[in-house]
Length: 156
Image (cartoon, rainbow, N blue to C red; front, side, top):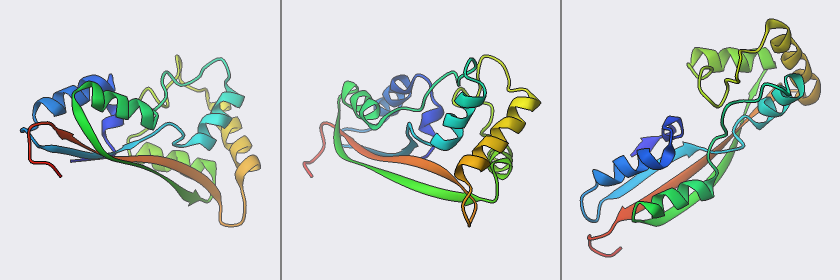
């Protein structure tokens, strides 16, 4: 079982292959994973502010995860997607929370070069201008939930 960490494994299919290799016959792999569309507001504004410096990668789509599981010979038992929205007082607070969680250095947030201070300030201003409502600004998280079984166990 894994909770929202497998999206950091690149390439994803190699990580899933490793996990599948450790399953006993009939064993089930169950996990949640962040999907493409996570922090979509932030990514859209980032592209407006620094169009020549996009993130190096996108999170996987649900179909990509399902294909990778099936490629490893696992039978997909369940899939579902959820969209959760967190609120913060400002874009600066969202960035601060992500930084404190250690989520600002990966391929999903890093471009070919770091954003400049001016670009970060413009990102915050634009994000707040586009998305602020009473209650703050949103940060959307797309979460995929998966369960897949290795062949050889009792039917379920």
